[in-house]
Length: 59
Image (tube, rainbow, N blue to C red):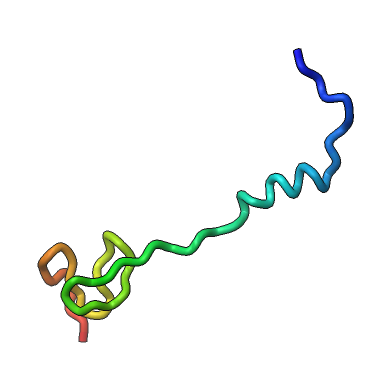
């Protein structure tokens, strides 16, 4: 069984874990009706349409 020869320092282990804390940029898509940027699979906040129909009334 493999056993480490030296203790892993706090800096080494914490820097390895640091990459999991970062958030990526959210995905964006374009509304086919009005052309505004929106999140995928979400109602457009600009015109209120989703999946070819009006889901909410936007004034």
